Image (cartoon, rainbow, N blue to C red; front, side, top):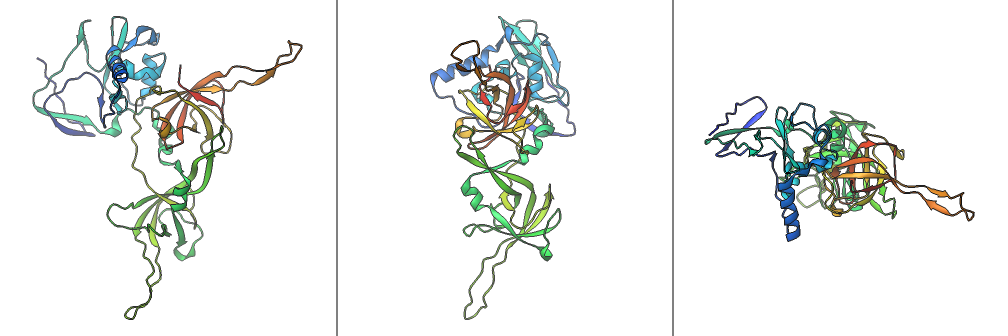
Length: 402
């Protein structure tokens, strides 16, 4: 019997456990049920079989030590021709696929090949018969903090976008609180300044328990239009900073026999940070919880046929590698963070000049590259362009990778 000894290092937290079997990556979060017999069978097959050896990259190593600065997508490319088959390489079931796939610098990854298939594990293979099981006595286990786990994509590429894009519907836009005044009637506000704001009549800004105190400040909510239908999918607001509520809003009270009338008093806000100067009329939305950028790269489970709506943060219609685009599919269409989509450049209409009748033809759509979804809203998602052979255009088609 082998025992595992774990030393406490800075940046780690200690968790009490009784047993540990080291068979693969650590996962967390709620389970997603598999309902139909067909889904259960598929999940079981995925969990047990791995990938065919033909799916491995030509120079896939037998062992790989995870380094600081690696990403799940990059490591997927080390082992696989098609990196979106990462869940199969790990033998993950349907529930695990939707959990953060936590891997840490310093971990050793081992490629196990058996019966024409391959699977990746963090446990060291024993000969060619199976996997070594590591067992511990009742003791303490340490887990790295989430911030030290490997992200799926380069954090510097998307970190700002995890905080910045704000997509709201028309009702949400109308109900957003607004800055109504500044101290000493200043025209522009920056970090450290005091601003005054009001919420909607039925929901004034309050310091009561459970009410938001941290807000994003935005302006110029631009409609995102579906390239196919022309319908407005939502409003993309320009993020300009953050503010914290320091004093609540007070409603006006009428005069009574014993008390004088009191005027309405707006809430007081402190500007915490700003990307540009703020002004009266800018809107406020509650700060959402911080998202940890680690998720499983994978193909969508259902067919996707979407379009590029816009290039984020610019007025241009073309995007290059490592840029972020908005697409016309969201959570209600089954899109999830980690989904990899194939970009198709629409085939142009041409005239067949070799035919006397000069018919008009449309050449086939061509594969242009891949993008990964990293943030989702109801009808819109944001994706990072991972690799392309040509520029990506607004209106380009997005489908399941092949």
